[in-house]
Length: 84
Image (cartoon, rainbow, N blue to C red):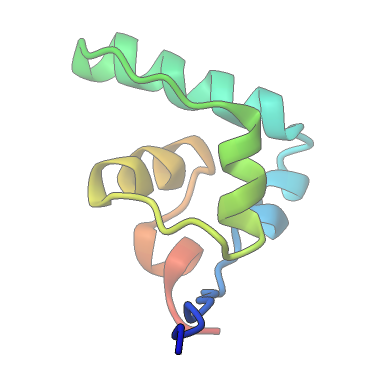
């Protein structure tokens, strides 16, 4: 009668890049916010729980957020979010 919602997951390398930079999830979120504010003069709010969801493949970031994450992780979108 009721259709079960399909769960989706996606893979990425956010956690690996974050750990290489010795950043906590909260630290990465704060770094993304700082880059958005200082480099692009825009306000972005990124919670550490969102970073957890991205790392676990439960949340797919927008292109803008993916770019900010890649910059914060000192890498490229392709390397951070490309196929493994």
